[in-house]
Image (cartoon, rainbow, N blue to C red; front, side, top):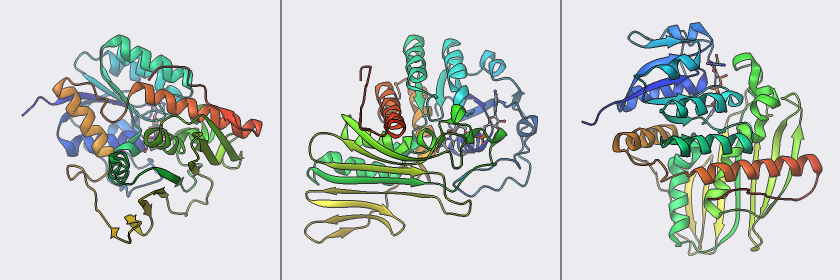
Length: 354
Ligand SMILES: NC(=O)c1ccc[n+]([C@@H]2O[C@H](COP(=O)([O-])OP(=O)(O)OC[C@H]3O[C@@H](n4cnc5c(N)ncnc54)[C@H](O)[C@@H]3O)[C@@H](O)[C@H]2O)c1
């Protein structure tokens, strides 16, 4: 049995409590410490935590005995026993904790978006490179079983070239739910554009490479103060393919969460929808695979399991996601934002290396 990774989690909201439970379920790590500005959460009272997907029951207190608790994330980072820091605070705080943890010689798994901007992403990935420690970002949809299956099938070449693809992610509105309603403040969260739609921008980058330009339209300032609450983007690869993504958090609170996609290729179509996951071949065959990765229930489990295994084995965690791709997706998102604001097609400036 390999050594358990000694973990500290900063931020115990929706994602921090989700990560906390996944660490316990996987059994590859030991949670040594948690930090949150809200003492109720570090004491185990998670009743105020709300998320947009999954069934959470935090009505009963969680047993936190044996876990060190901090109010300040920097105190957790200074704890010499901690090997890995799992950062789950609001997005605008990622950079300061990620850089400090890397400089303190810790491995870092940081929730997505990596930061509030491309420049923050650049500084964080540079700090990771300099530290020699492992870093990854919670772009969890790359690890989600159906998306992984579709990616591997598409990349195998069996389907031929892509003709069109459309990705969709629509969440019920989470206004008024989170800590200090930070999601609705565009400067802090980047609104639905960065917080939600980034997953699909990143998938477009993952499946098809770097788009040359983007043309986006957005609904702005309906839920958030001044951000993009719903977006449609066309990604231009200059090869005749039609690649689109839609993301939004504007629907009313009782609207179910939806993530779906359809990828049409020369020899078949892959579709994830409310009806399930299907491969529909041009010759009429229909397959309904039930992809599962190591019997883990969600992409979050696969992502955390992979990062912990990488730390245990001493192997860089870059099989599913590289620092260059993290930056690319941020560069594309910023081009999408400019496209909406300036009402024009915008060339993507990648400004970096792969
Ligand atoms: N990968 C995913 O599927 C996914 C889903 C939701 C959110 N996220 C991301 O996870 C991050 C956290 O989102 P969330 O939904 O958990 O938010 P949340 O509002 O539920 O939780 C944030 C937590 O951080 C705490 N906090 C605030 N400032 C702090 C500080 N300075 N030090 C320590 N704790 C502090 C708050 O008290 C709260 O408990 C965001 O970057 C978000 O974009 C990712």
